[in-house]
Length: 421
Image (tube, rainbow, N blue to C red; front, side, top):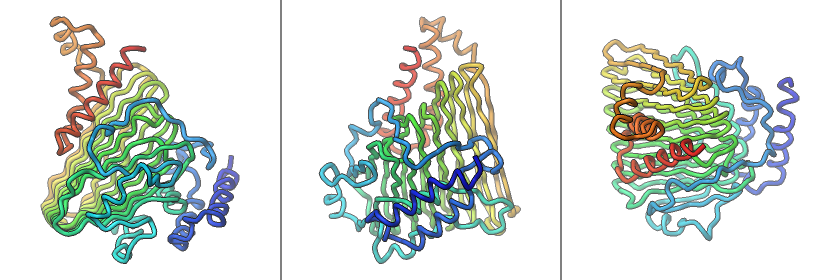
């Protein structure tokens, strides 16, 4: 199917959205420009540099969301929960009023301070970079988002509970988060649920701000595309962790700009896949200030014909001296049919930096498995213990120990399900 025919259903869906959906008036010009970019790019194929491991075929705008039975990883965590069902906020199940009493909150049309945030990061070119990351689904999200939140955390505030964005329903919706975290402020953001085809988040961390972001994608049975764009100010800290399992296709794009001196950013993920799973984590960290640190830690455990993709880049701009950039991607293959593709990149234009990347792929350590079996474990139990320890190296990137335990519980359930096959 050629690009024109592939994009025809999407053009029709966009035109219908603009004509009929009440949300379409929000950022109408930005929407039109974003869809034009999506349409010009077309659905990704192997010919697109950053999609060669993850081509997207036959994706239609009306396909029903597929949900995997399972528990919400954050179900028993005390949070300010915001529930979206079929692309619209469910006020009756959401703590929007309680949250609004503490922070400045608006719909995706934003507030006056949003002028400096909305779309500031989307499709922002990286100055001097040899290659730009292609972001068609980020453009689709901006073009067709139906609902979302714009949140400003006041200077100096530490929010007492996480904000939990919960996505439910079967309509292939597009949801969006715009967040400005004030000077010295701190917040934790959680995301879970399969009820969104695309999500887009733009987060700006001002001086000394701190954001912990955790995402659980263990209920996604079909397809989901996410885009997280963050700019990290001076002395600010961003930590993002994603746990993915068994979806037909997940693509997570994370773009982080280290914009102020002494900032830090950590992007981590745990991937678990059986059968025909395909999960892609693509990360681009741009260092544009001095004395900044970034970490990328990706761990994959794959069985059956599952595939995991990691594309990670550290870009160090001229003048971004004393950069410390670390990147590691590792995979354990539990079957001969499993596959891991890694594309680590360094692009450095400063001369006083410490940057490294590494990638390994292999089976579980047979000696370690033998040792555990000699201590009374069955083969499946031994594998479960080794997998838990392997994934835990990524989970430890999470700051909150309680949330670490929630991710460990989810990992244990996945291994139990595998053992019961």
